[in-house]
Amino acid sequence: MKPEIVTLNGENGNKINFYLDCELEYDDDCYQILRPVDDKMGLDPDEALVFLVEEVDGSPSYSLITDDDLLAEIEKIYNNMKVED
Image (spheres, rainbow, N blue to C red):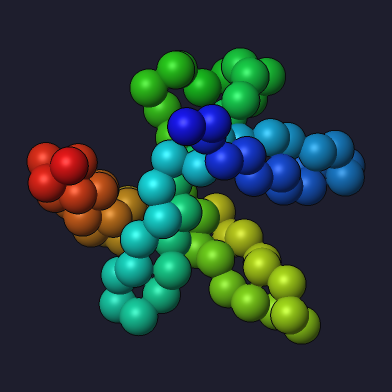
């Protein structure tokens, strides 16, 4: 199965492609775990970014999560999902 690609606007309006690793819910919010398609962002291949996804004016809006406590909770859920697979 071909991985789903999510394209986001980066700084200066440049487009950045991500692989959708996982979508999950936590505390009634939707989060996506995204991995960059290429290494232009300087992340290791095992690193990913977590985004809160909200609908704004009928389109998805992505907010990067930087709160360490929230990231830890999302990571727990993600790891539990991977164990169940």
